[in-house]
Amino acid sequence: MKKNWFSEKVKKLSSIGGYQKPELLSDSVKLDSNENYVISKQFQNDILTSARKNSDVREYPLGRVDDLIQSISKFVKIPSSMIGIGNGSDQILDLILANFASKQTTVLTSNPTFGFFEERCKLYSIPLIAIPFSDEMKLNIDDFIKQSKNTDILYLDSPNNPTGFQFTKIELQKLIKSFDGLVIIDEAYGEFAEYSLSNMVKTQENLIVVQTLSKSFGLAGLRLGYFIANKKFTDTFMSVLQYPYPLSTITIESGILALEKSFLMKDAVKNIKIERKRIIENLKKYEAFEVFDSKANFVLFDAQSSYKRVYSALAEQGISIRKLGKIGNHTGCLRVTIGTKEMNSKFLLAIRDLLG
Ligand SMILES: Cc1ncc(COP(=O)(O)O)c(C=O)c1O
Image (cartoon, helix red, strand yellow):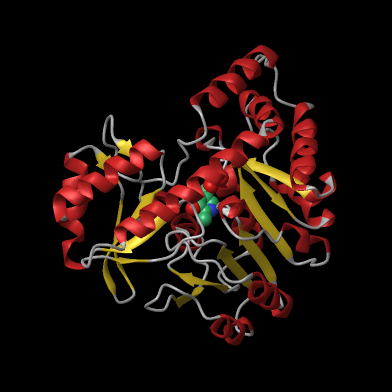
């Protein structure tokens, strides 16, 4: 019996399934992972070349973590004592769940919510109360306020992945103020949205705002996430929970340089928002689609019974989007990332050829 516990545990874990990564299509127009191809390749080359010059990877990355935190602090205009870092925001979320949640703490979130977060809750057997989106792909704040009494942790991705929905600032602030427990607001797509709640952390002790360089800066491959929270939590997270060296030297150096060039990120975000409008307007022309508004760098639409056909036809032309299927009463949901103007035009042309 004792000998079997390991294989039993592996069996139990393997039944969980894990996070569904998108299918890898070679040489595809990649509009499936909410990455950012709008920010120029030159930006990436420049920061990596300089980072390479500044890096000595024989050494563990030590002192420059503080410089990175200072750079983030300057960028978000929040004191550095309230900023922590992680290997992508994924890792920050994971460490928070692993150390603050358990079978005894219930998490309040939306359905759907960020897939990785949901999978991690499953892994740690953390109970979830997930409030569904309406048919218009919106959430009702009162449903959340009602459920807050029964829950210990509130997690919202703001804007939400995959719907693109964001509460109004006033609504979300009201919910956070009324929530008696830990609040995690995931602003992975915050730069594309109407507002950020990072400043609220200064007055709200139970609030952690998580952000990343993966989306707006187009640096998903660097794996650089950070959070803003009260000083005591931040200290404890960084000294006790976080690994001694969570980021590579190249990531730290590149992150510092990228933040110096945040004006390039802002330009890219501006263009993505213009393209987002164009994609929404174009998709709305097709009766076969129901298209939802988005505050992020992607658009969700319901292609109903034709969604598999649309997905496959695009894939055949080397265009990769995310196939989601059923969300509430919407049976054929697809999510497309906003790419460069050229990528988006290819996507729209392929749709026109199929349905026009
Ligand atoms: C809502 C949300 N949070 C966090 C992440 C992960 O970001 P990172 O690359 O910083 O781990 C994603 C990535 O898709 C996301 O959609």
